[in-house]
Amino acid sequence: MTLIIDFYFDFISPYSYLASTRMPLFEQAHAVRVNWLPVNLPKLIELSGNTPPGMIRNKALYSLRDLKRWAAYLNLPFKMIKPGTFDSRPAMRIAMALEGEERALFSQAVFSSIWSGEIDPRAEGWLKQVVTAHRLPADWLALASDKLDDNTETALKDGAFGVPTFILHSGRRSEIFFGIDHMDFLARACKEATRSRS
Image 1 (cartoon, rainbow, N blue to C red):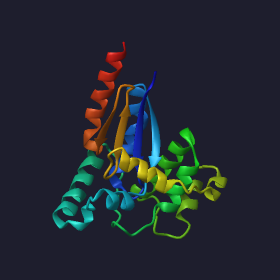
Image 2: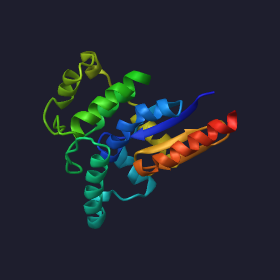
Image 3: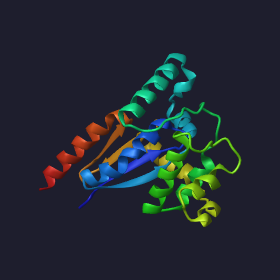
Image 4: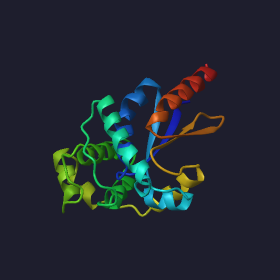
């Protein structure tokens, strides 16, 4: 039985971008199946009683330095976008309408396009630019799912209060991990779950 990880994310989250770049190799290294699950981050934060990092000055300053540190560590291009200046929901609804590998492919394209600075998500027609630049099917732009809020409610019930959040389903129980800095703990939990099955 394959281990399953639910990966909750929102395109407005730069930490989700960083985590998304690690998911393909993580999936291979630990023989897991990753469910890419879009959520409405502002709504999740509100429902969970959390506070956005940008609302706390010192936390916002720290996060910017930390993001640059992580991007350098992972050798990734990174350009900070001022929080609250673009609406990720159209892209999130397209992602929700896709499934499996197509959802992962689209999500990776959106993340890399906007957080590398390649495409400005505040510009008109930015999603079309993403689809064109990554040679994705143009008909994906016409897709939209109304299930984004349902996913957000499910994430809340799973214990999420922000993104990236990972839920490891190992058969016996589910375990939650929050943040890119906890992916090593997630990896260790995957190894332990695999050992316990053999």
